[in-house]
Length: 426
Image 1 (tube, rainbow, N blue to C red):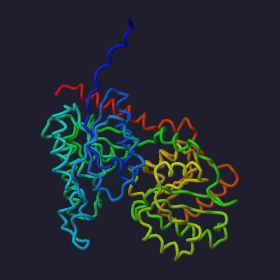
Image 2 (image 1 turned 45 degrees about the vertical axis):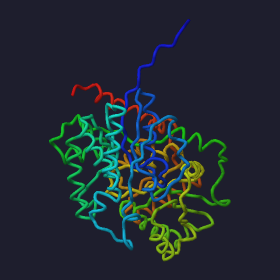
Image 3 (image 1 turned 120 degrees about the horizontal axis):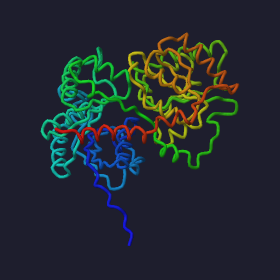
């Protein structure tokens, strides 16, 4: 009788992540979620250590089904200081350093040690942007001696970030402790990796690595299933979409608002021919009065959040996609950029032409790049972008270029790093 060869047992890796289903309203969830899904294809069995859902400001069960069957997800006690521990909206500063979820640290360490004893993971991985995740990872690595990847994604500190000086000093200490203890510090862009290597020259070059963000083909396939591709606006009306947070500093849209107002005043655009949807900005209360003051609330719509696949469907049907990223974030690339590339629609990027975001766009064949800080540049670029949309000459991402950025490909890169750590003598 023929028998199948016995499959080698998977190695276990413990992933420490704040962003995991059912958290809502964050594209950051996709990185850890897809790592946990696709690492199994490379001989790894992930265990996820995250927070109790009550720590999330908003929850959405829409992606719970994306958690791989049989995957162990451990949820440790955690509170949001602002929502759970404040009195009339006020709380002690130390209760939110390094972030509002610092209460996760003791419970996360306790639960993590239990998971390490029970499942004997050969490696640990913690992921930012919630700094408490790295605090847990640092503690577990020190107590267990396991090799550890610290996934920074972007920078934890900069010259003026975080703005609160107490938080800045703690985060800079934590950052230094993490990069000196972690076996690999992982980033999503060349600029972030370069910045950290210059900041910590005592850390060996082989301990810095890059695994970029990406899009998930499975999510897009599900979004496309049954999708009727039709214009989002009225007849003759172009619809431009920005999907996601618009931070008042890092993605300040106010020069864009002024440019739209100038084009409207000049008679170049009006609400019958153009609709701009800013979906889930996170700062609607701040931006709504600005739109009214500029007289462009009839053109720019501040839209509420929708489910993840609904957001992908909207990208697929839009006439054009907008991307915002300030020069202070030149070493970062918004995660949504990769989804924009897969959607295949024309992109207008409002960012510094010298940053990593602009470089990635140019490599994918896009040259509609204007300086987010300059109203005149936005006014010129937006007018030109609209003209190319109307005459059909706007640039779209070739499918072959988009596929280079899939989450499956990124997970394969992570698996190589994990194997390197697991096989190295300690």
